Amino acid sequence: MRISVFGLGYVGAVSAACLARDGHDLLGVDVDPHKLELIRSGKSPIVEEGIQDLVRSVVANGRLQVTNDVAAAIAQTEVSFVCVGTPSSPNGDQDLSAIKRVMSAIGAALHTKSAHHIIVLRSTVQPGTLEKIVRPILEQESGRKSDADFTVCFQPEFLREGTSIKDYDNPPFTIVGVREGGSVEALRRMFGHLPCDFLVTTIGVAELVKYACNAFHAVKVTFANEVGRLTQAVDVDARQVMELLCRDTRLNISPAYLKPGFAFGGSCLPKDLRALNYLAKTRDLTLPMLGAVLGSNRAHIDHALEMVMKPGVRRVAMIGLSFKAGTDDLRESPLVAVAERLIGKGYQLRIFDSEVNLSRLLGANKRFIEESIPHIGNLMVDACREAIADAQVAIVSVKSPEILAALAQHTNADLAIVDLVGLPREQIKCARYDGICW
Image (cartoon, rainbow, N blue to C red):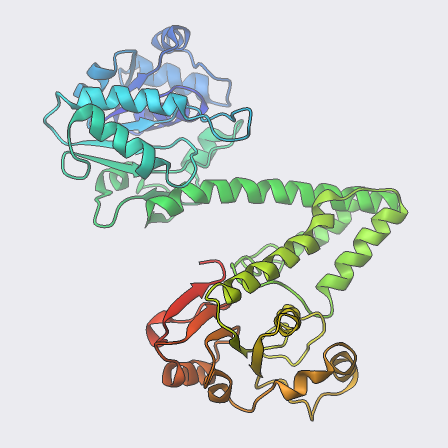
């Protein structure tokens, strides 16, 4: 294919060189004359393992050329990748000035082009950037309609400086965000041979997934370093601790716990986080991330309460009370915290949890109820239908087949639902639906 790449920094230079290596005709576009002259002479504008030899090769065989003429680049190619920088503004926001300039120039060039053109944004941008900023600029400058006269899509990159060519050839996946019904066949031709899944999603998901990935990488580095400082302070080898942690690929290094949902609780996580932070305090250590986890968890409980109170009604059903479905453990259950807050605010509450039978509770669970919420027995009912019979809002944290069947049968058009578990919405009739994170 005939491809133009706007912006010849790390992402643009590596993408252009690798696409040219794979047999496509590339035209690199940049405003920096020094970068253009380097590439014309067969030299790479970046320092990267293998990039010098690759650029020399693709320039020598004519697959990679460069220009500063945007109109010529658009006229001579079928697909354009935009890989310009989005640095931080002083207030922390992203600086989109380079994207706006490039898109304005591309739009002006499209004004005189009759053939359909594909614009692929690869720069890391916040959700909504393509739809609210990029697409309007292109339509305004070109006088043409998106989807009809040209296509815009988003393809996040996952290249690390220092290993970007290896990452290009072995990505975790190829993700393309496009409007519903949009074609991505041109991109599939370019990237479908790579040894990974080719995934098509919405533009917003594609824009945000790169931020989520980078934030997760930062969290992992910070977690390992905070554990390292703590283990060093208590004379334990952090390298051995983290090596063993990473050997657990069922819970630790896995998709476990990485699904949006409700707050954590139970007899282990809260108390162990508190103990870990206290241990750090006794060694005069500050662990900002681990120290903020419980506060973040409380904020998530607050978020659920705000959703319950939003409709402005008073009769509430709670389907589920234990900290996790399938257990009767109420210790530090975030749902107990929700119940306490609602009771304190004067809400009329009915609770159903098939696993929590007050007459069967023993030991710590029984003591917890007697000491913390002794009046809970008056609020619990024996069936899901009883809980939601007169309710105006239902908080649902269980989706067993029995609960789903009861909700499908007994919910009605006057009921608002706050979903904490991901209910199959097509089975539930309700006036208003709110998911805790969706």
